[in-house]
Image 1 (cartoon, rainbow, N blue to C red):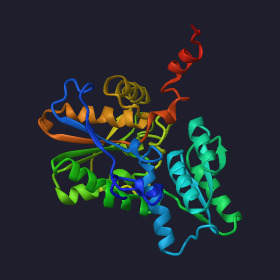
Image 2: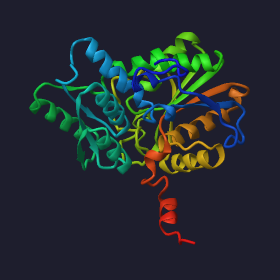
Image 3: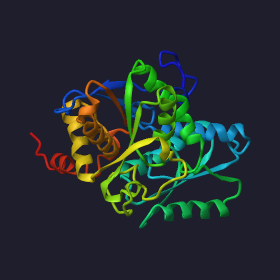
Image 4: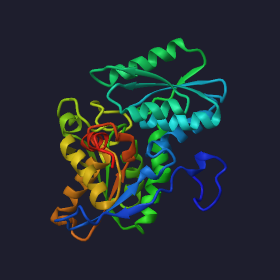
Length: 322
């Protein structure tokens, strides 16, 4: 996590210190200001670069893994796997990734480009992916399961970096943090840091309305890749959450499209969900004049083959040449 003005020793030195920007054109009716933390500006275009780096770093420091010897294993919906694959390539690890078939083709291609071995599964829920990862672990010599959903290195890096970056960039004026909940690492780590700095800061999670388990609902299929795994993970610190806001896949997709069209921000579907939640909060009268920070976890280019851009894909594929 080096100074961006310096030449980094390797690509891991470019992780973190992502910029923030105000939203100006999708905020009609808002009485609070919204600033987005642009995690798509990470080297591999997602917030998961932070945890990929830290999970490997801390496992090495504990003597649990060794470059060139240990086979790393992870269950992921894509972006954590990509982050791990980038770092595994730099450090010389073999990496095995297990992921659901619902993940975009872009994610699969990027993982293979970094040299990762892929196991793609047709599943009913993420627990099947976790079980497959454990099975591979048992039969693979010298292997180590990083397990982002239970690894304390996940929220720790957000406590050490994401939270402080938001606090500093906002000049200590942040009044609320909004972040989607996948593993719960971002909202937990950054939220805990901000709460310690100012207990009055409100922390909001975001989950798919179709799988609103944190609001007492049942797990179900949805189109917001990266959040809403359908289970409550041990890493999530529910005690700091003011509220978990359910956002439908339809609203998340439409908001992500609007962010590109009106803000010039090409982001993924989960960023659309987070933005939609932030706008809801920013319209509440009690938040007048306050600053709300929302985390945009990933870049829209990783979703070109998905429902997010399917109409545009069809349009450009059928264009006539002049």
